[in-house]
Length: 317
Ligand code: HPA
Ligand code: ZN
Image (cartoon, rainbow, N blue to C red; front, side, top):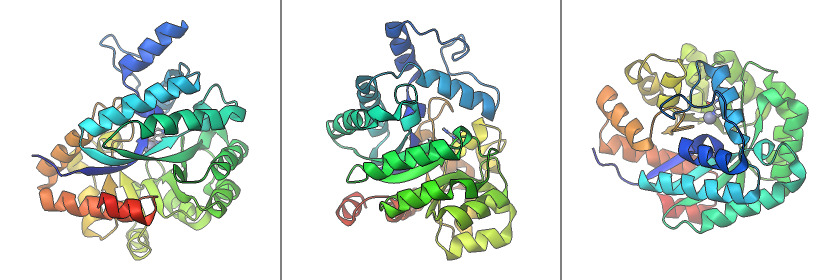
């Protein structure tokens, strides 16, 4: 099926790095990437925690602002080839040059400049803290986000291991980012169950949730998501690759759709999960019988949830 222009709201910049790109940087810098790739050159991991470890190991080669500029160009060209016209990328200051946040503005400037040089696709950045690095690090990341909030940095988010800490521990970080006018989203309900989603809503003031699919196990929570119009950033291929569901047919995305909970379709970390946005659309079309009209509606819903100004929103609809 051909698909109309796509919006993507859940894509990790580092997680979208093609394996060849990471290998090349590793070779240039003499960094051994033991255990990161299989013998065919693909990222290799066994489970979610293994995935997070390999992800972090791959980011070790990203040392300078120039490396991030090159990464941004590669990722945006890759997304544009999938028909994406607007993308929101999670960017983690913690992965910029060895967790030294003092150079954050230099990294951000390099990323923003590279993004503006790629025609045909508009990018916004969601500055993202890493849950398993803890609430103090999240506070520091929120400070980076708040200090650089503007036309390019429009959101604050949280990824990482959902099993670590309580959502409430991150309330100060999200409050600071929210006060700076940033849109708020957090990963929840990917490996954590409905309680994780509920606590995220109760304490972090988010309008969007990364994944959120496990909310489908709780009918009251689904009603709340629909009533409060909480937007779920759904990444079916990611959920299947990480073993949350056995296949796209068993994924609850159609239940979410019929429950009236707003959602978008995204790829999360496409090369890690052996997917592209076009493959996601095609798999959903065949598993759930979705047609072009369904995808048009999904992208319209995404435009409403996007962390961008009204002019940009009008352009991407
Ligand atoms: N979940 C949590 N953290 C992440 C993910 C994810 O799917 N991808 C990159 N960081
Ligand atoms: Zn994610």
